[in-house]
Length: 149
Image 1: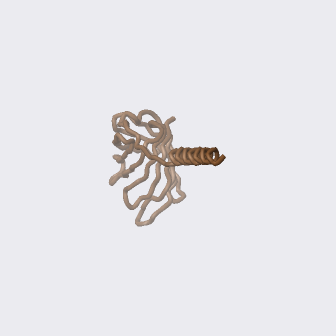
Image 2 (image 1 turned 90 degrees about the horizontal axis):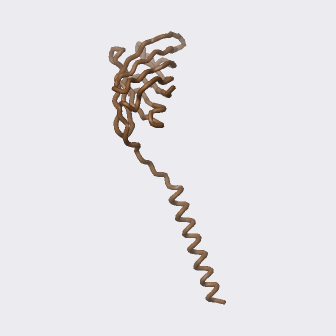
Image 3 (image 1 turned 120 degrees about the vertical axis):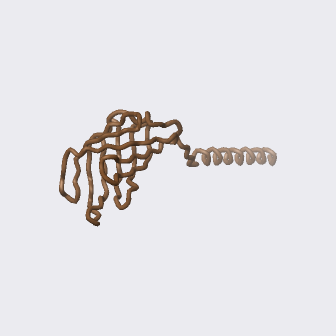
């Protein structure tokens, strides 16, 4: 009887350890950088929206907008968007930029339209289906989201 109890106890402990180990492996967050992106990952038309603050005359003003962007797969982007700056709306602003894509699917966009330009950095999501970026050009603070159409 003691021997049966010892065997059952050992099997129970083994089962508990097995379950605990499998749960810890499944519950562990592992991050792997995606590999294999390049400029050709971004090609075609994207809907875009942005929001944040634009510096005008040493004032940080609310700046929001939406529009359409086109990526050529070779490092060039053009866009047209409507926007609101501090509550005053405008439509049809043209925008051009160059972009570079790193193998880990990070991206940088540099505006060529405005003097001084904007510099966005971010990440490509879903094999090019979406781009999430933020403006790193002080003193502007803008977030940009682009989704493939």
